[in-house]
Image (cartoon, rainbow, N blue to C red; front, top):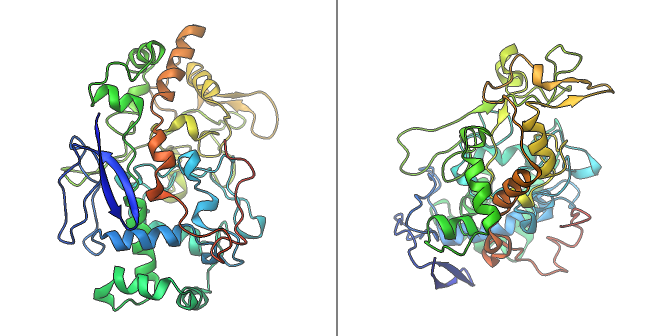
Length: 394
């Protein structure tokens, strides 16, 4: 796949496919993506605008959006890790542990289900309210501090003009409407489709994938392994919406991760879709994550309880996880809600290695380093001066 240099955009020179999509909206925003991919859907009340995306980038990296000025969106979503944080469970203000593993944000605008199990969090704008103001658990801790938040942003030299440029139709007002829509626009711009697999599959580069990865591709799409039934399509997930979709695809599955005491129970506070439907048959059902950049997003599952891709494959080979002892002991393969697609399989060591090679071929190195998604603030700026980050970035 050949690339053309497009820039500067919002002060950045961006390298994008020369076959970039021609989809533009009435504000002249151009999606920087190949022509074979439809853009994500955009809410009517939040049309894309370059200035809005740039404002959202600044907000995403600004720890002053948290109660104590230590946690920004980036504290749980680090670019080098495909916007995850490497922890089993994320950490919020006052060292509060989250209930879920931080999901990656690559191509997040295509996802109609934006948390692990809440079917109502279906837009980026709405979802951004959860980390900002949620209390169970506390993440950024701004509940009841809305006016303080507006005052902090208003007092900064950058924001008043940036909001005025991004939201002229709202007279540059700094409020929840404009903050959440700027954050949504920035996240919607996070397109990741330049992995070796993309260059091989869509770009015609026969040398982009290794022989092992090509063998792994054949295994991934083989009925013996059944990977592709849940991780399907261009985003490798059965949760998908595009600007051209005739309907929205959403799916939640129980993959036999727990079966506490053989009762079908999951750990407290992690019941999956059942927390919102109240139905026993939804216990343990969680959203299927995309596999794009999956090699960069360990640990895995909704609670980060599986550390490596090899262990993930072992889990599915067994048809579910057996926990021999402890408070969560049980045979996940026997869970009554477990997806019928998880029947287990046998694989040689070579086949496991090849599957991992294929999954590694879904890593988009350009996405991990694209300056359009990077931290815009100087090191000594108050937006990041006290910001906490994961201790290690792999």
